[in-house]
View 1 (cartoon, rainbow, N blue to C red):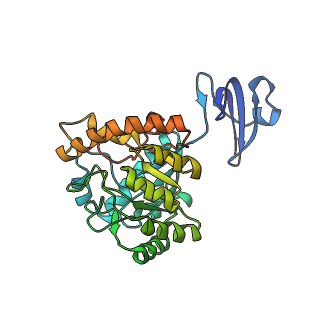
View 2: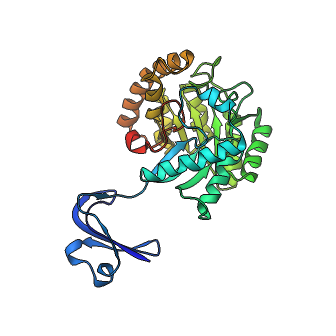
View 3: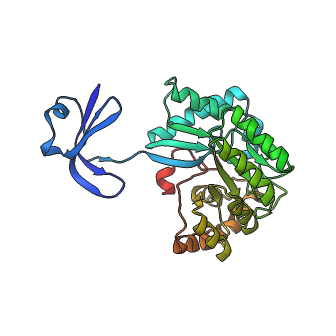
Length: 323
């Protein structure tokens, strides 16, 4: 069946044009142009009235956690998760992204292979949702960030890291995530703590790239960011402490930066509801992030939109806010 969006304001990714028409048939855009010049085939299609509305390309959220809902206590929500509940939450949250105009998400840490399987269900048309590039479980050092919430597996040393990458890919992972530093939502470990060595991350990157998978690195402090960037990761998540050296390395290598601003704001704007340790670390990280953002933009580092949706007070479908 074909559809025609009539008399709409169109943003094509570069410019905004008014009084446009778009004809779609079989999932493919067949014609775009001024509504007044629409071909007969378009006018004969089922009409979607576009007046007073804007049509834009689907958004991409490069950092989400579909199995979490964004409640105030991330750790408690994790303790209550079962595979069945996680799958239901992931399907529901995927729909929220679609409703917000997001047509692709990258899930960077879920319960087992749940997010991978939900992505497969969407791809097969069993449930509605955006395309899902899921990383399965993230990789973290023993006792590292994320070990307490069930979405990261503890592996140490290049050989074990390489094996873990293979196992995640076997489980359906379409991307790989390594946790290169501490984090805000794990008690007992500093947010800027350098976790994996460059050698360990290199093993993950080498193996993932062999299988055609990209690698995202959670990294807050400059030491962990540098290890990840020099190891060849494709994107750095959060990437708060952007030193001059970090900026130079990322610019030269073309590494993407996903600043996940929604995640920090969700915590710092609700200090009485989020665990105290997380608020304290988020406040400290926020100052670092502001300076890092200024330098990253000034130096021309490539950016992507990633919300970290599912963390406290950071609901799914917030990509417009992140942008």
